[in-house]
Length: 332
Ligand code: GA4
Image (cartoon, rainbow, N blue to C red; front, side, top):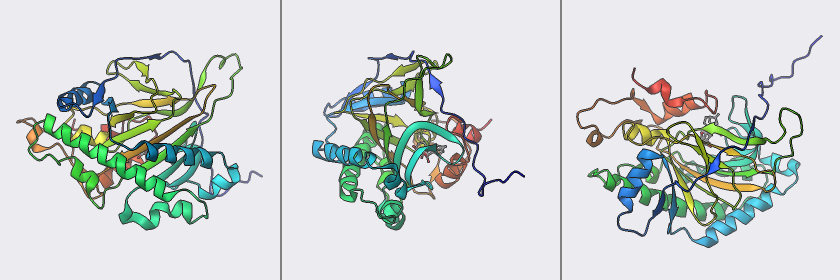
């Protein structure tokens, strides 16, 4: 007799491998936030790449180094300790499994809410399970990064000549903003020796776009992040621990009626070094209607059906990582 475990395990696909063919690119837009013309460069970067690197960002170095060293400490704990903060539903500690639908990667992570309005749930998944993770280090880091994300969004609104400078940033500033913070650890991947896998690397985090408005990523000096260009080719992003990398998310694509494109990206595990990254995903309140800003339409029709962030998120959590989530919301 076959006994099925209860609840039945979701079918997990094996972790994919990839030939390390993408080349490092110097084409990635570099935005110096201290320069007066940065708004125009920002708009161009969002149109052409949906991705750029930011320097002179104003995030204090001590917030960055302190959170990174806490993350390294946490990921060095025995698995049984880390698992006290899991499984991620969706918040908490996760190992290899990403999201609820069978995606896997060579990664372990902590996923947290950032919003004090959800304080109960925010750290419950971690502190409630008796695990120490430095709440104030997360708060200091996230508030500084959120401030920078809002500055970028305001410069973008200026660059797009939107009258209301805070048209995008107010969604992140809202008390109910549904933003998320993620700390990822990609251990060095084992040497793959089978005939079919020799010379390949494991996928750390499979290709996807971020559903939110904007994502702000910072990593240690280990490579791994790759972005997809408009022609579908992939390039490797040279790591830079002193800078931030910013992604346009699906919601910003919709709010600009497709003028900005959310960027497909993925992480390939490194065979020699650990990669630690921290990402702030700035999202709107759940009840917010996500629609093109009227001033950006200039007589055009919206490319998208009307939906709220709650509806988009619900549908995202039914999808697989690599799916084109916006497809369901495009007008035909
Ligand atoms: C991708 C961006 C963020 O990391 C994330 C991810 C989320 C998760 O890991 O729980 C999702 C993924 C992300 C999009 C589709 C769904 C949900 C895993 C997944 C398969 C936290 C997010 O907001 O969306």
